[in-house]
Image (cartoon, rainbow, N blue to C red; front, side):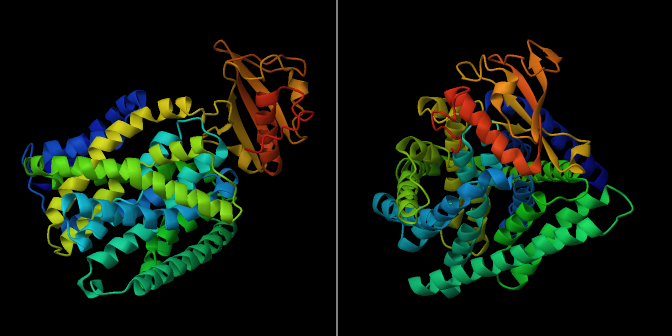
Length: 501
């Protein structure tokens, strides 16, 4: 086919994928499944466009994951996830280790897979997917700590799992001891973290002081800095994924020029990366080869979801308690277990042993593909129901309101949107009784589809939407006060409710 036809086909796929996002949003279905479906239609199982190059798929996949991780870091609010990061790091290290070991041991016993392949399979499936987690969980009203743990974990756990899969798939490491394996993994993580923590602040400092001739250059510069971090870490034999996520996290939470435009650009780039990645992975798969792998895949997926993930969460919670990071309730543990979504990351990681020529790696790829499709289809749409049944949802939480043109940046202020749910103790409270900090104010109320500017005596009602303007310095305090009043009413302080969780 000529270049013109390829461009037309590519544009048509992107437009169809964008249109399908609306369907995915309404049903709660992760959009990755629709994008994978497009790939299957184009590949050998459908139209018949040939694509069976695991080496190329691996390189494209890792690059696309870097873009997705960069967007995740740029759009993560540090003030909301800060308290959750220590526990997320435990999940991304000790939790990943437990998941690898449990999957490998159980699958080796049940299916008779050799130990090396079982370990690779466990490592491939150990990572939760940032794109899947962000796309589903950012629509769920969860407590800041719980949402922060899931977001930060999905950002951090790609790095150790990629390292584990690469080392396990390498013939030079087939006889390596556990100590050597852990040492190499630790060194790569330290190098990646060092690069990310160096490039992020340096890039933020430079962008605040360099006046670029066009506003559109700032988003490009920010995304380029994340790839400087990625490439630099890889050249130093460190974790590029950890470096890119930390750099993006620092840049996304710095006071940069045109920050809102930068976030919008990053989101657009991540969507394009997701569409291209999932379509490519769908084309790489061959449905005709998968029937024989369905039963093993369902067994492995069941072990992963019902045994390995809950055990990894339990062990991480116990370690977190010993490290004085706070105890995770059984309800939160159950939700963390069910919300460990797998997406593109395991499928991309499955191309690594395939590209390295590991025996049985093509079957491993097919099994991972089936696991991702089936269990994402099962878990993704049921997360809102799980949150309600486990009573971990928090519908009164304040959320960032995305604003394209944001003069508030110059004022170092934030715009927040709060929806008052039925049953909230905010109902009946007058605006002045909120006792918000001096730097925060309710500037608009939307009620029954009509908006108005409230007075100090305006009573808040259930189903109202409140628009708050707050200085960056007192944003956390304002959010805590709103949570406290929502739980205990206007006398929340008297009852000792501080809105800390």
